[in-house]
Image (cartoon, rainbow, N blue to C red; front, side, top):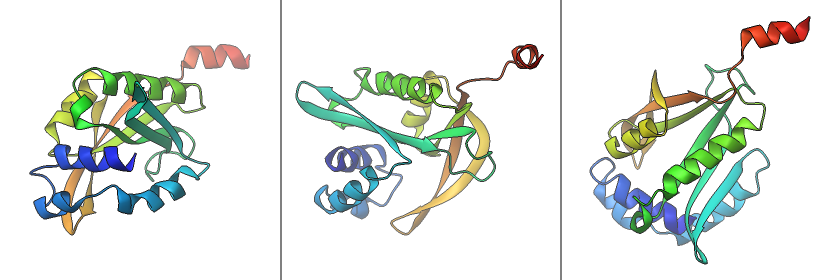
Length: 168
């Protein structure tokens, strides 16, 4: 996962994040971070393989945004496919799988954050049915402040008539 993340960042964030920072990204220093992160009970993870090789992954869990009710929304924390394996439908397949898994949970809404200048990722998310919901925030990466946009989609919309009929 650390190898995929480093390669994906170097490709996706070229021209968005500092070039020197991206050039120095390596997988090995990220391994302790990933071991600790994978041990967390509140985060779900999925991988996609081609043959015996992991070529992409996604992580998700409860939404961390304070403007959304706790337990109501899920957040896709990360979805990366190795750059050499992109544009083959693997990211879309993984995205659809993640949302279907989260629909089985009690979540009603799904969200993710994307760097505003990452046009390719934004187009990908839009093709997958997500819409920018108007929320923005700043992230700091390698000392540079970069704007991000939140995208969202309904997972288990509440049907008010069904809810009313069920309570009678």
